[in-house]
Image 1 (cartoon, rainbow, N blue to C red):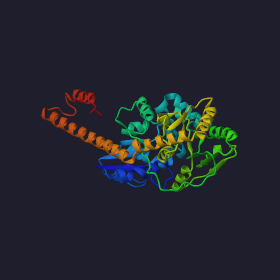
Image 2 (cartoon, rainbow, N blue to C red; image 1 turned 90 degrees about the vertical axis):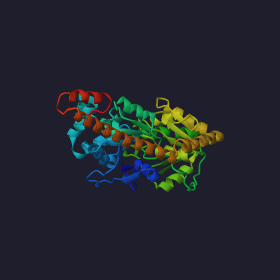
Image 3 (spheres, rainbow, N blue to C red; image 1 turned 45 degrees about the vertical axis):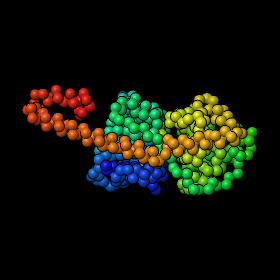
Image 4 (cartoon, rainbow, N blue to C red; image 1 turned 180 degrees about the vertical axis):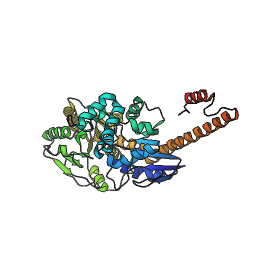
Length: 405
């Protein structure tokens, strides 16, 4: 079986690029893979099935969304909310009408009117204020012949949006524990927060909780690592916080290895799975996460889940204080985290699931085409022409069993 593989790849600074760099070598041992690149494949590559990795970044995924629209295939839906992607492919390129139409397709006349408000600068951009309320995933779902998702949360959202095709739930693969020594960091405990630090990562709430922790544990240290969104640039950073911007993969692993606890907060969620959280599981680090989306599906043994409500800072502080003062609890959670990574997120297991899903997708189309050819030949044998008597009834019967269209 040959797979046309559409995904951002390194050196792209994309979580999905890191994901594909991890998955591709193992998947290529099971199926023949031809990787697509932006600007290549002016004609669609010959393949039994096309696989499209879709995320919310228009720079990384815009060309993939266009390729999917031209040739439907299996979509790896890395997040359900795609408002940023749609806005980047329309408004950001001067196509106001495209944005208006997308909002109307997704949310009716009210959506179109809201889009007018955004275009006329009468309301703030929806992708900044309420993207989760306007996911704009409909066009991608319409072009997908099947979906691969990482969580029950995204599967449920896709079904609720009316997607009726096959869905394969495949865990995010875990990295092999790297042979990278942990960097020496002074602090007790050392808490880490990693990744692109934007508004949804609850950075102000984390800083407030850490300041409270420092009041009782002055030796605590917080590593805040990643590019800080411009809207967070004026944050009041308390004592004990060490900031680093974008770091290399090796540096990332060494900093994470120095941590006693890793915090991965998220709200609102776009339906994404956190590569940082998966790395923490690989390293056997206790996790503190927001109780939303995929994060809610992490087991109690490996993660403390913090509800996003009016008591979020208090609950987060209590979680950090609990882990700071209980080394055996950290050890138990770390062991459970490592076991989860090795069991459910094993790269070999994930690659097997991918190969199986792709074989089903390719085989399903082949069977459908073969059945339709057989029906057409049998119809011709008994004198049923494409536009003649009986054709409409035959088409209705095919539609009843999912072979219409």
